[in-house]
Length: 168
Image (cartoon, rainbow, N blue to C red; front, top):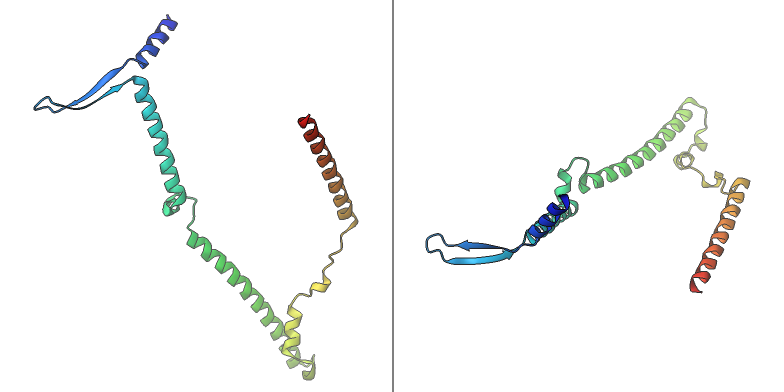
């Protein structure tokens, strides 16, 4: 019974029908189509997919995405970056001023001679010295580098062996 219904449904999908548009007053045929149920189904499916794709691309690549919750505007991101850079430079300037003021306080309290007091020397104290950084690799780092190099050699050898066997 179900096979018979399936065959009837398949037949109905491919039965040709005619869609005619008529002028109601004169019964003149304006245009007509020969359609099957399958053609209509495929046309509407492809049209729906096309409509979804176009809508997605319009939202994704235009400023409309700013109206979707979770997306921020490019101007907002630009301003946030600019403010982060500005706040960082202000922190540096503030740190230098604090060191300068501490130096002046030392001079005023008499803890430092005026002849040794120089604004440039105080500001130089605020700048971090790069020579203090230890850039030498530790034993663990050297061992890790060796292990990675060995693993890369093994993988390269396996890849070349596989490539040779594929050519044969």
